[in-house]
Length: 272
Image (cartoon, rainbow, N blue to C red; front, top):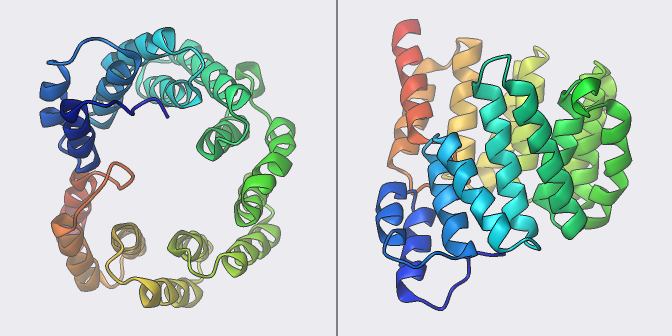
């Protein structure tokens, strides 16, 4: 996927990145000669450090060095997307358009890149028409998503239904996604969070309990369950315990930053 390199230093830098030791990974990468994989990993490290400007700079160099890498374009799209979210209203549209263009290029290069398909779907779903978004464009991707993951198809249909405020359809699709992937904790978390937002705490808790039966120490489950309790203003003692466990867990770049757990703990303290 563009980050492979037969070099022990690169391997160590990748390991550190996977352990969320982004600063140490960057230090090692400075000692390596320039290349597409090195640029890409430096860009991902800066992305995880919320330095989205430097992330785009290095990921632009990565795609220039390896213009056929779908993964590089995906991460460049993500970096521009975060710049759009965190910049002024004057610069945000241009960054958003670049995010879309890079997601589209990632899918074009590799139609089986499920992460790229998912990110492009979410862009189309949420962006206004003048920035290339639209529900019709999002819907057109669902069959491509379904060809890679039937459960993800139903999740995408649920997201589309949510955007249209068709709550019954959204619930039905989320239930179907969980049925098709009964051992995927993420499907149950999606269902639990939906129920919580719809004012169905008992159904939400039941879904969280089912997820905990699969893997009670899953980091995503810990923080999402805690956040749900905090947002609802209930079970705050339990939320605190979950967040403390999260802070001690071994996290990966796929997990939410520890800083988010610390902020949730502060909310617990103010609400207690």
